[in-house]
Length: 116
Image 1 (cartoon, helix red, strand yellow):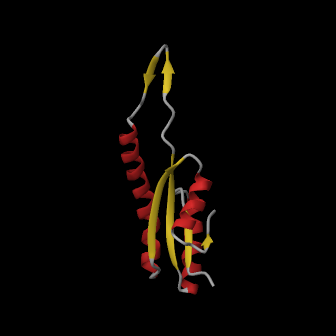
Image 2: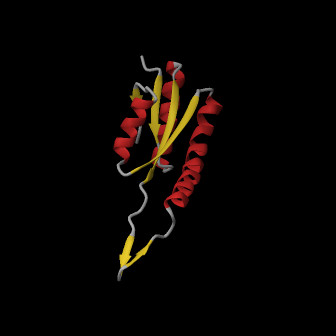
Image 3: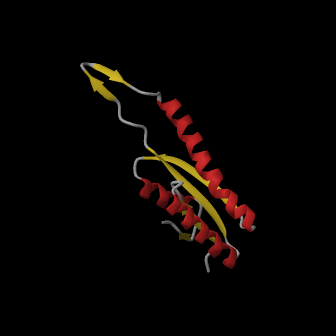
């Protein structure tokens, strides 16, 4: 049976439902979950009349992405902890979320993915 579920979330109400279902499944299976968030890739630079405009540096963007991910993940992980389900989190910045989800499942050795 399943022992480790990956639950990608974007913080939406629909993702919250997927998290709730994954918690119920994990609890019934005595499995653990990893809640995963993929931040969008660093935005492309804007060129205008020979001038490069970068709204924020890559380092600042990574910091902001981590802060945003923490908010989403903290909200999602409060529920499994209350239900007594072991829960970890993972976050990456990725151009293609679907690739990041699959890579996270492999990296964390999850045997199922539950998502909205």
